[in-house]
Image 1: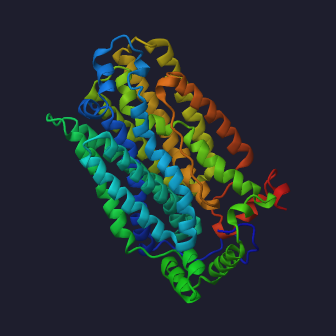
Image 2: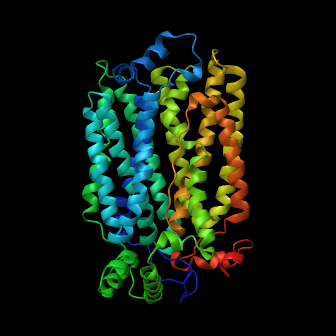
Length: 476
């Protein structure tokens, strides 16, 4: 979508209400978040299961069981295991660059559909894998699915939602990510108890359930009015769809702004070259920095490696998986709370609260692990539970702020994603200080440079930059 165009209506004055049609459509689309969250939760769980490690990563299994001299932090250090975990994120990053032009050229639905089909194929390969090659190819396909879904679903939600409820609707994506993580952790906890040792196959294959819902559901999804205006020669189709999703015939002001935005967007021959112009500097910076900051909060490392982390500090296999269930439940609950308050408190306030909470929690966890755990020591049960509580506090801060808002802000401006993986064995307890330092940087950045986007229609988003103390010199 183009930015910086003239507008015809006052900010926040569009008519419309929440309709059941919009709610149902967004619920189906937000399933894309479930497949992403499910993979985060399921992968970290199966890599802590002994039968899975024994079959695909016997070297790691041997170090974990028999090598008492190796550092606590390096028991899971393996280039092959790293390839397994990182292949999804690399594939997802590459897929994002293809998903963006597909979404722009063909609409949001085709991009979501591609994501669902790719994830479905990846789940099938993962569940049936009998060697490491099948396992990694399955991960790559999962990554393609995640890349397409993560690019198109938040954009779809933002365009379907009424402007004054856009924050809550868009956060439905992160809420579904939390549901996926929680379901995956619960499933891991159950399948780990299968004595025959093939429980990991169920965990990997069950990713096909949310992928099937997304794939089949997308066939019945309506296209967004924004996309219809861009791709349809009949503007009445877009107008009728806008009337249907808003529950009123009085949508002319919003329709006019969508039409203007579409005309300017079509006139741009080289969108990536155009965004490098000075007048689009704030949008470019935010679209890159906000997703990057979301990753360097450390949440992917904590969520993905949660069962491994809890095993490192002395929890058993089953207890580690249950601890991951607890953290997943905490994160989901806080995301739901954020969904309820985001359009009342605003984005900036929630960013500040969550940033402070994450920082304090990370500093305390890092200090405890440095002083009490070390390379070859162990934590008492009391300190182990204290670390669990602090990690829950960290996850709660993320679930309130950077989790949902990291998706919301870029989709309000336009969409861009970044994914980062860090090898825990290299940073050891310093991991928490490393990410804590980034939390300080991102919190200060939000305070100084991110304007409030609450209740601002995405068609009129250029106004906020012209009023900002720093960015106005670029866009005025």
